[in-house]
Image (tube, rainbow, N blue to C red; front, side, top):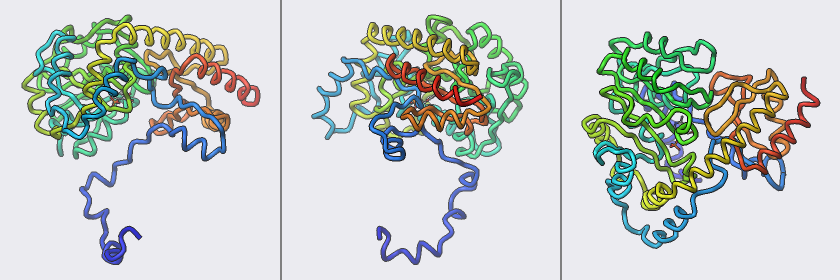
Amino acid sequence: MIFSGVENELMNIDWSRRAVQQCASLHPYIPGKPVEQLLQEKGLASAIKLASNENPHGPSPKAIEAIRNHAGKVHRYPDGDAGELKAALADKHGVKPENILLGNGSNEVLELIIRTFAGPGDEVVYSEHAFIVYALAAVAAGASGIAVPEADGLSHDLDAMARAVTDRTSILCMANPNNPTGTLHDLAAIQVFLDQLPRHVVVVLDEAYYEYTSATIGDSIGRLAHPGLVTCRTFSKAYGLAGLRVGYGVGDAETLALINRFREPFNVNLLAQKAAHAALDDTDWILNKVKVTLDEREKLQDFLAEHSLLGGKSHGNFVLLKHPRSMEILQALENTGIIPRPLAPYGMPDYMRITVGTEKENTRFMMETDKIMRHIQ
Ligand SMILES: Cc1ncc(COP(=O)(O)O)c(C=O)c1O
């Protein structure tokens, strides 16, 4: 027994009463099912994960080389300020290093922003089917989450979100494109929206999938104006570094300096800093993989439309499948070794999200779905 000796004492303590009040309404984030788990559950020899919107092509060779070159140095703490990576990002975005805040994934940046500006009595506004971490982080901070329904069930209703802002609103979060719905707003529409907001509201513009949209809507950094705007991006998606956990926010230096007070000292590890810097310089590789993904996404969406399964047009590296029996389809796909993401935890039980994989993985997905749909009406 791990706790032998204190076992009796543990049984006598009601830990749920000791935890902070908001713990009762917190449900842990449910990540995509790991391949190893499915292999074990189903006794399969191979499986593919299309559940977490990762880049299926792997990291850039330059990032791998950087990891190899620095693997022997991990006995030392990394640069706590991640100065080299910050400078490279500042250069890329035409801002100063103090306009960049790095995090252990953009998830940490989102949580840090919410922890800094929202507490008991404050409201955090987001769209009903927005990325679930906004709601989780708001509850964890003791703030109230205000989920604004979408007019069409998928796309952020910007006017309704602006109307939902009150004197108590400290933060508004929007993902562009949104995960899991894949919807996108152009920059002109976002600026009109920002102009309707009180100046004191911190706005989180979550652009985790920016690289898949840059050719469509252009770069928002430096083109949108709002005093407390923080634009979040990540190395987890197009850059293929999800396992290393690096993301960042770009915003006003004073705002970021406040958020930085909540950051733990060495939140971005050494290999993550080096690999992200190397990947940032490998523009051709990234552009090529983004193009491959976008071409494959169109193929998948055409396939879903042909089978009357398309849940909406996606602007991310994932597609949406919609069917009243989507859970049955999901189970059937898992039985063949394919792991999609159910969207019931997002309150969208008819939907599942499928990450755009490699050509081979997508072909396997389409082949298996085609077979499954012969038995499902
Ligand atoms: C919209 C959105 N924001 C943020 C994240 C967090 O990504 P990471 O913490 O890996 O940077 C995700 C991950 O799926 C996402 O979909």
